[in-house]
Each structure stands twice: as structure tokens, then as C-alpha cells.
Amino acid sequence: MKTHIALLRGINVGGNKKVSMADLRAFLEEIGLTEPRTLLQSGNLVFKSNGDRDDAALESFLEAEAAKRLGLSTVFLVRTAAEWAEVIARNPFPDAAATAPGRLLVMFFRVPPTASTLKSLHDAMISSERIRADGRQLYAALPDGIGNSVMANAMMSARFSKHASGRNWNMVTKLAALVDRVPARWPG
Image: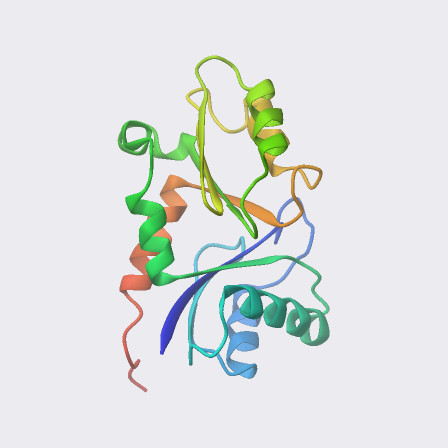
């Protein structure tokens, strides 16, 4: 069995795409995924699969089934537990993680951001902000806060990438802890 983390884009944000976490957990079980767990109300899932699908195939499967079974049209971004551990290990801004984890944003992409995407972000940055792309992730240290950053607002918009979703460092590490708490077999 393989453990996965899935991020849903735009769930329960501003009254849009409302879905209960209990419904998401039940949905995962209905489609054959096991030991589903959720974190907060914003579409953060941890579950196990038999490992027969890679991230891209699992994303497509989850999106199609969520549309069919829940009437939910959203983007799923999937990482394995090992990939998630790499996201944490490769953080280029450990100082921000230690001192202001709520102001360190990780954007998760379906495919790596392009050079033109990165240039547009650099153009929107203020001098104290820092970004670094690393594969299908982009790290952004935002000392004035996510809500006060023109660049962060641009990153979170559908115009930037409809196949990306961001989580602050607090959420990244809470999801890692949730992965560690998923037992091999739950009692009952």
C-alpha cells in the first residue's frame, strides 16, 4: 500500500465548491482508496492506495470520480508520502520555516512552472520576497504575509495556473504529521 496526499484546489473557499470532509472521506472509500483522513475544511486529504496508479493517473481518476459522484469540479494535486517528505527536505528557506511558517507558501503544480511564469512572479515581487522553483513545487517566502503580497495573490489566481494549489508551511508540516499518523491498519 502506498500513502498519498491530495490537495484540492479552491474547496470551501469563499463559499465556493462546498463539500464536507466527511463526504470526501466517504468518497475515497467508495472508489477503493483506504484509510482516508482530512485536515481542516479546505481539501487536504491523506489516504492509501494499492499503488497501481502514478500521481498523474490518480489525479485524473480522482477528478473524474469527484465530478461523477459528488458533482464536484476541482483540481486534485497528488504527491506520495515520499514526495511530500522531499518537499519538506528541499525547502530552500529554512529561516522562514523557523521564524514565520505562516508566511512561507509552497505552490504545488501538476507540471513544473515555466520560465515565463517564474519571470512574471519575479516582476510582481517586492524586494523582501523570495521564491525558488524546485520541480513541481515553488517555494515563496513572504515576510509581509500572503494576504499582503501581490505576487502571492497572482500565484493563487486561476490565471496563474489552474493546475496548482498553495499551502503555507504550517499546513505542509501538519499534513506530514498526518501521514505519519496513518497506521498500517486502523482498528475496527
